[in-house]
Image (tube, rainbow, N blue to C red; front, side, top):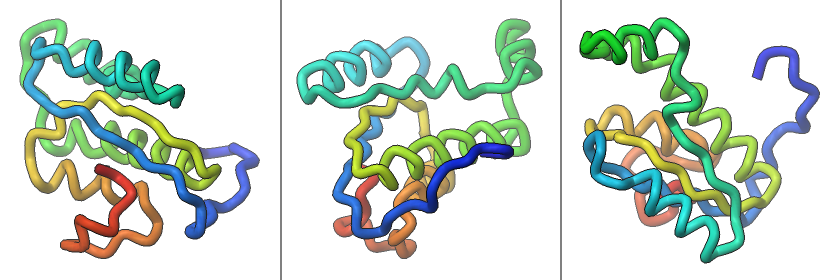
Length: 123
């Protein structure tokens, strides 16, 4: 985060991010919040990371482009990276419907190598 005073992520930290994915209105936020409660971990709602411009577009029925989504996904990635870097577990609700969007989120694990899904701490 710009201007934050966070320590660099610790690649040896043991936190896990579980991303609950699905289309709009399928209940992913409810499920992720319930999962976070059951596991006693944090919860991140992806919609909270959208820019005002994205929220305006969506509220007017205008579909987001990949260019609109990239800063949003990067913000989520950075939030996941911060949590994992502190060794925290976190449940995340996010549509992440395309493989390339999920790849951005997986980069929240600083040790992630593309294609090494089993070892990635973003599930």
